[in-house]
Image (cartoon, rainbow, N blue to C red; front, side, top):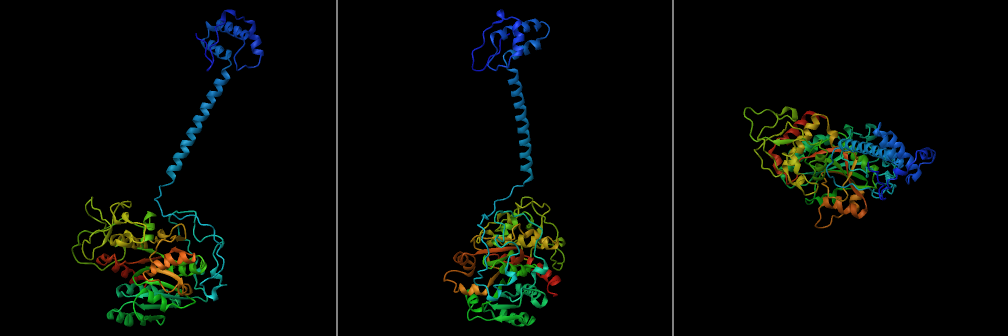
Length: 503
């Protein structure tokens, strides 16, 4: 049997003819020698090996290993292999659990970490009466930002709105809703929400200024006869000429807070205006514009979709129903499920199937690839602004969420969504009159939306923020006129008639 080799060494010569048994005792008394046994030790070991070889082959082999001082190394090596194998198994198991526990998150617009900016009470542009107002102090430590700058999580969370006691009307603050009037069929709905939010009804609005941004005499007559007489707090504002620049420069006064609302806002959550008022006061030196979290807004629509919770799979019905037409019901549960070809897909630029069509729910909660929302883009002039079909799916989803009492799905983990100088639609925003007047006039060739959400914030080093707790629905942009061919406006009217207009 060949003698084992030491790696990197020449094999020991076979000295068995010269070994004596006496040297075995000397070997046992000596220290272990990892460089190999002496000649005398080797003689004794091989003689012992020969004596036992006829009865125990295992013993014979073991003695040879011992003779070369490798048994200890063998055991150490074996133990090392076992330990490494166990460690690898544990690491693999942990990695698997970690991977499966965290679902994949779609890419989101970066919310980069921002250096902590103490909200020192400079109060630039804030009425003097509010410089020491308790509501102008942050709910939390004033040295931290009002949004989670270290996280881009879009995970919906349960509402953590301020308690009702904290949303009371701030003393010494005159809050005026500024409505750019021009579309009576939308205003019929909006007016109910504004009346509900007047101070006399427990709301935040001291006055509502209806700015007549139209020259259509029929529309002006409707405002005079059917809107303004509804409340002594409703004030009609006439302009020398129409245009948004004219409105801002000639209707705004100092020391007032203005809640600018488009006339086609068709749903407002009860806490929305209070949320905007308090946020604008609390962070007066941080945000120039504070916007509501709008359903049908190019930026926020993208956010709502990528929560994978606030938006639901809807498609337009392809054929008009037969039989008598039932009164419009706003509830999603009152409508049938969608039926159609398995390969049908509604793109963002889809054609209208027929006038007055409905948007119906798919059975599969995850079947989004067939629906227009799958093509939404994060940008002010992307598909979220152009597509009537995307807007229709957003509105149908909101009505379902209202019915199921789950509008908290729109509220993201961060209370404030910082747009980081991205242009934002100004359908529903809060501003201080002082700050507006300081930035007038709007430069030629620039519209008020770009000016207020991009140019001014960059110039005065403030931000544009969306309070994700402040929810409202904007019906349509001028690029989404096909929404008029759906039943959605009638459904919003149905909801308002049932719950809001009775105020």
